[in-house]
Structure formats: structure tokens, C-alpha cells
Image 1 (cartoon, rainbow, N blue to C red):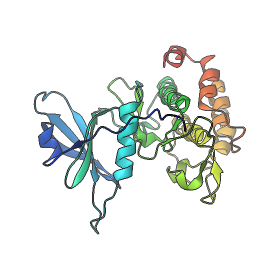
Image 2 (image 1 turned 120 degrees about the vertical axis):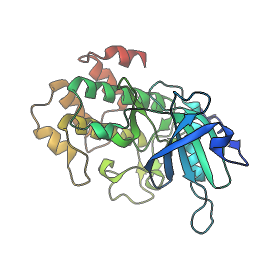
Image 3 (image 1 turned 90 degrees about the vertical axis):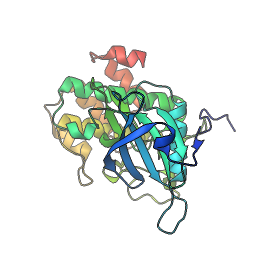
Image 4 (image 1 turned 90 degrees about the horizontal axis):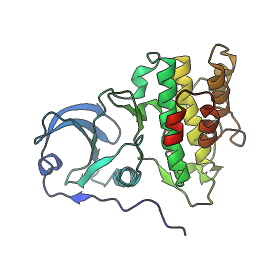
Length: 284
């Protein structure tokens, strides 16, 4: 077996409270999900700074341990991956009642809040930055498995940063597929081959990431939120007024056949020819 590029998760075992241990003041809960709460926090020694703490519920209603695997996967990926468009774990800890990850705060929120409100140039830049993050992951045999607008954070300068690695996977160097049961994701971002597949069906996770990137690009170009009932390829094909270079590549990302679907690396390579953001593509 090839050596894993992911390091062991570095997690503090905390007897007391995570916020007390790391001198953070919880300001407010800014979001809640299946795993727990997202808390905006203030470092007591730097009150002008903001951080985000992702709190994972540790025990379910029957007092069984829950979210442990998701937490450890997310910590591993964020601590190991070194890329400007991937979120970083600043510190992680296990408390008596919950698990916690402290991260940078992205003041502009997530990309889903900007559908229909971004310029074409900024939309292209955000997709390029997410694609650069995915290219980095794929080159290291890593797949995200839940690329979506909600998991793309925007910093103060509207740079896009890919986050939420709870469903991410590491593959062996020559491995090209995983069983459907290993594939997470969000239904309205599922590629055609994922829908209706049985648990033992083998799927290409790299091409699944590419399709999800296509849905993100589709939403920004079409100025519409993704929906499980939309045929993205059909809608993009009949939309003639999209920029030619982006429309062509959008259709390649959304190709219903994974064997024909373009890879993220090839998407960037082809986009580079016509993009004003080629410096980003070359550098990251």
C-alpha cells in the first residue's frame, strides 16, 4: 500500500471547554447543521480578530458516539492540505460533550449567497480558484465529494476557498473508482451516474468532483440555484448567450457520461487560453 499523503489528525484531548482552553469567547451561532453548530468566536488576546469554531455533537440521543469519523476526516484534510484555496484547521479538540475545529473566519460567507449577484469576471475567478483547489487534491489522490456553493467560502477580497471535508476520501495512486456506498454529496449536485446506482456500483470520484464543479459554474452563469429536478446539461446547451469559452467547458463538465466528462485539470488547461485569470491557473 502506498504511503498516505494525509498526516494523523492532531487533536487536543480537553478536560474542560474548548473555548476556555484556547481563550476564545463565543459570540453567536451563525449556522447549524446535521453535525452541530458553527460559532463565531473572538480570541480574547486579539479582540479585533474573528474565528469560526465548528462544533460537532459527540453523542447522539442514545449516548452513542457520533460524528467522530467525519470530524477526524475533516481535521486530517485541513491540517495536511497546503493550498491557498483550501480552508485550514487552526486547532482541533475533543471535549466531554463535543468535538471542535477552529478555523479562519470568512466575512463574506458562502458562495450560495451570491447566485445572481456576481459579475461574470468574478464568477469565473471563483470557479477557477475552486478548480485549482480540486486540481491540487486530485494530484494528491484526494477527492472532496461534496463540492457545492455552500462549501465555498469567500474572504474579504472575494477569493473563493473550498471547505467542509467531512466526506472527502483518499484513494490509492492507481485507484480510479470507489463504491457508491463510499460516495457522499448533496442530491442536487449528484452526477447522472450517481443517481440510482446500487451500493456496489463503482464510480469515478474525480469525475464526480468535476461534475459538481460544473453545477457550481452553471449556477453562477445561469444565475439560478441548483435543484434536483433540473437537467443542467440541457439548460446550459440551450442557453446560447453564455460566453463561448465558458459555455463549451461548462458542457464538458456536465457531460452525462463520466468517460467523456472533462477532468478538473483539463478544464483549467483549456480555460487558461481565454481567461484573464491565467496567472491564477498557472500559480495555484
